Every structure is written in C-alpha cells, then in structure tokens.
Amino acid sequence: MRVLVTGGMGYIGSHTCIQLLNAGHDPIIVDNLSNSKPLVLDRIQKITGRRPGFVLGDVCDKRFLINVLQEHKVESVIHFAGVKSVGESNSLPIKYYENNFIGSLRLIEAMQSANVTSLVFSSSATVYGDPASVPIKESFPIQPTNPYGRSKSMVEQFLQDFQHANSDWSITLLRYFNPIGAHDSGLVGEDPNGEPSNLVPYIAQVAFGKRYSLGIFGNDYDTPDGTGIRDYVHVVDLADGHLAALNKTINTPGTHVFNLGTGRGHSVLEILRAFEEHSKLKIPYSIKPRRQGDIAKCWANVADAHKILQWKATRSLATMIKDTWNWQVMNPNGYDS
Ligand code: NAD
Ligand code: UD1
Image (cartoon, rainbow, N blue to C red):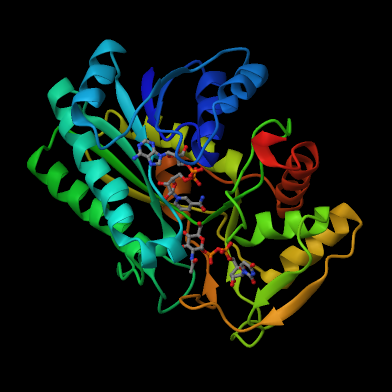
C-alpha cells in the first residue's frame, strides 16, 4: 500500500516507516525537518534495503499536500507530524494549535480533494489528563491539562465530527502511552533537541556521562515507592500498532480509538534500577519537587487493541532499556554523532 507518512523522519515515524517497508508497503514521507535530520533516510535504507520516498514540506500547506497525495497515488495516511513538548506548549500555544490543529485540518482538506479516505492519527494518553483511576479505558473522560494535550483532543474532536459527516471515511485515533527504546540495530532512535524533558532519554544521557545527575520529580506520590508510574512501550511495538491499525481499519468506515501501551506501569525508580542493571553503571540522582502538571499513575487498558487490532506489545522493559542504551552508545550526539 502507498502510505503518506507525515512526520515520518521523527522518532515514532521513522520506526513506523521501517516496519512499513519490511511489510512490503511503500511509505512516502512528508516532513519539514523542524525536529529531525535528513540522515534518517540513509539509516532506514541501511536497515531495510529500501529508501522511502521523501518530500520536504509542511502539513499546514494544503496545496503542497494535494500535489503529494496525487503525484504518489497515496492510498492511506499516517499522520505523525506535529510538535510535542508540554512545557513549550505553555509558552508557545500558537505553535501548538498551528502545527497540531491547523496542520491536521489542512491535511484532511487535502485528503478530501485527493479522494484519500483512510487516516491513522497520532494522539496521546495526555488527552486523559489526570484520570480518576487506572488502568485507563478509551471511554474515560477527555480532560487535557495543557495546550499540547488540548491541541490533540481538539484534533480528535474535529476528526470525529468530520467522519460523522463523511461516513465512508475510516479514521483511527491511536493514543500512545510512553514510547521509549530504539531500533535494535542502534541506527534509528530518539534524538531530542537540547536537554531531554522525558525520563528515559534523560537517564540515558546521565548514564553516558553527558549529564551530571537525574532529577526525580517527586517521591511522595501515592505509589509503592513514591515516584510516578507510567506505561512504557517499545517504539517498535508502537510502530507495529500502526500497521495493525492500517490493516484492520482501512476497510472499516468509522472512527476507531485505541490505547497503545503495554497495560502495565513502572515507577521512575524501577526504570532507573533497570538502567543501572543493564549498563552496569551507577546513575546519580536527586529528589526534586514534583513537576507541574505531572500525575501519579498512568497506564493503559489495552483490551480493545488486543481484541480488535490483534496487536499486543511484546517487548519487555529489559529490551526497551537495552535498545535505548545501544542507541545512546552508538550515537552519543544523536544523528549528529
Ligand atoms: P518527533 O518530533 O520525533 O517527530 C515529529 C516529526 O514531525 C518531526 O520529524 C518533525 O520535523 C515533523 N514536523 C513537525 N511539525 C511539522 C509540520 N508542521 N509539517 C511537517 N512536519 C512536521 O515526535 P515523535 O515522538 O515521533 O511523535 C510523533 C507524533 O506522536 C506527534 O504527533 C506526537 O505528538 C505524538 N506523540 C508522541 C509521544 C512521544 O512520547 N514521543 C507520545 C504521544 C503522542
Ligand atoms: C510527558 C508529557 C506527556 C507526553 C509524554 C510523551 C508532561 C507533564 N507530560 O509525559 O504529555 O505525552 O511526556 O512525550 O510533560 N521524570 C523525572 N525526571 C525527569 C523526567 C521525568 O522524574 O527528568 C518522571 C516524571 O515525573 C514522570 C516520569 O518520569 O513520573 C515520566 O516522565 P516523562 O518521560 O516526561 O513522561 P510523562 O510525564 O508521562
């Protein structure tokens, strides 16, 4: 299948392109390279023996998107392109509503013009805000607490309204929990700009000696060891979830919503210990105040993804840590190494 992958040069998109190529699909990437590097294409080719199509451009440009969709005879779209930092979204809300909401709106308009009616959209567990209980079901209330989360929930709402008015379309909303890890070749992985804001890239840089110490944001949460619990899922499992969504839902009109996670949670200290065990290094840390907007516990109910998509995350926490560490060691400065 010819699949347009917006944001396909980024962390999750690049892993998904690898899985698409391995499965015999033809991904065409559209990316403005605002948070990724051209070298990703060489790495994907090295891993798969095939080079995905790539067109430099912005998802807010409808005319450009129509041309790409028509020229490449695209049959389906996976939409990753967007911006994703919670902290930045508080200070730059326009950037978030523009790239995430306007970008998605323009993409749908372009798809409509080009008569492409199947979409898989990158949403986030952040749309659930602070849930009343765990594990989190897809039917839980949507109550995001920051501009990033609200931009995602607005896209979800818009896509549902749009599908309602266009009943032949198939739209799948995938709510990711916490993607970590890297391709097991060590050639593709997460390459954060500057100081990482997420836990696992931060720990990897401390273990490698690039940063002095990990700050643990609070040890007084209502959890067994007091630190926050999250549902960490291997990025390659997540990539496979997109193929499952593409295969299962392309011929099923409607709006489909799935959590993608493992269904179990790990605390910050458990992640730190797992990293120490694998790297055989002592990782310095100190306890810091809670980070504003953080929640105590967050993990997914993944029953629907198992049942309907027949998708299940198979890679263990040890594999996630091993692959993160391998990527960090092979690429000390990310793609600039
Ligand atoms: P990423 O930043 O690595 O990848 C996003 C890609 O989109 C980058 O290559 C960037 O250059 C590109 N891009 C950004 N704005 C664009 C625009 N206007 N036009 C064209 N290209 C544009 O991020 P990621 O971690 O791979 O996340 C992919 C998607 O998944 C995002 O929509 C993100 O919000 C969502 N998501 C990510 C996580 C996570 O923890 N990584 C969790 C939940 C949801
Ligand atoms: C964060 C975002 C979320 C986004 C997700 C993936 C916030 C409030 N939430 O989720 O919207 O979808 O990233 O991009 O930013 N931690 C530390 N020290 C650190 C970093 C993190 O102790 O230096 C802790 C956090 O308090 C949390 C856990 O590690 O308990 C995971 O944090 P992180 O990787 O940032 O993910 P989330 O907070 O779940």
